[in-house]
Amino acid sequence: MPLVRIDIRKHPDPEHIKTLGRIVYQAMRDTINVPEHDNFQVLTEHDHDRLVNDPEYLGIPRSDAQVFIQITLNEGRTVEQKKLLYQTVAKAFNEQAGVRREDVFISLVEVRRENWSFGNGVAQYAE
Image (cartoon, rainbow, N blue to C red; front, side):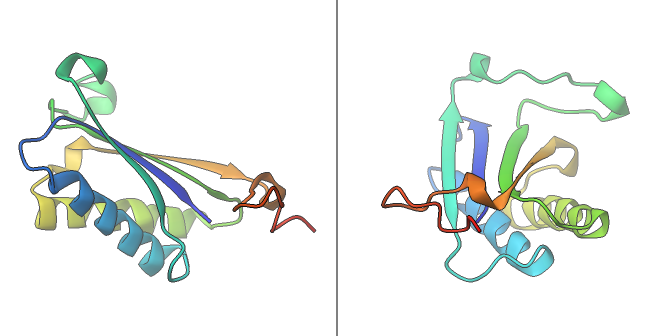
């Protein structure tokens, strides 16, 4: 059960952020074994001065078109799966949405299974 948050600066095309969400969901399905229908996302656009990035950290030239992606998910994926996820998202953003690879920032937050409630006040994954 990943929870995906995508934050971007306001974009002239209202479909742009939805496209990014679709790409991330498909990449998770393809690389980290996220099942069909397990799609929960918060897609947010911000005013120009509400997102801050360092344009040179780690020698990566970033622009104002930076996309911030935070995925909260169950722990247990391998380093290889995570690397493949990062590569898949960056490539697809570039090819399908015109986002520079340098502008794709991804953070994974791994949690234990009992830290989810999908509704009804029940911890469905708690053992």
